[in-house]
Amino acid sequence: HNPAAFVDRWTTPMLVIHGARDFRIPETQGLAAFTALQRQGIPSRYLRFPDENHWVLKPRNSLQWHREVLDWLDTWTGGSADRAASQRPGAGQAGTGK
Image (tube, rainbow, N blue to C red; front, side):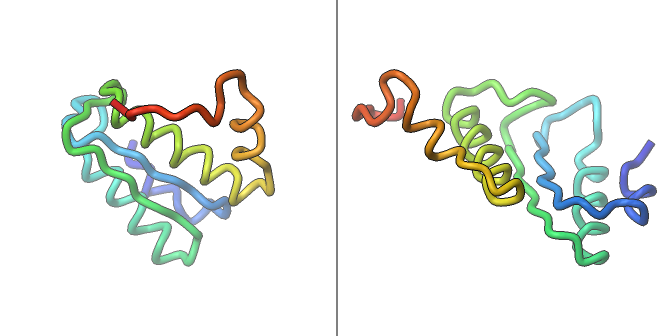
């Protein structure tokens, strides 16, 4: 079922993440859901990974996925994802990002 068909019942801000190579859910459904959210005036963001499938597995993409999700949750729940991340063991250490 295309999620865009149910957008008239949605009210919650939504982060739509899609891998362009996803063979389970066509990318057109993710785009349709995002477009419908935008037309309804529901806060939303579309994040596309051109080189990923249904799961985001590449290390660089995985880091971006986690940052985006944590930022989104922090924004819309009033949480403190940054504070929690800074309290983890090893947080704040320099790294190459590779």
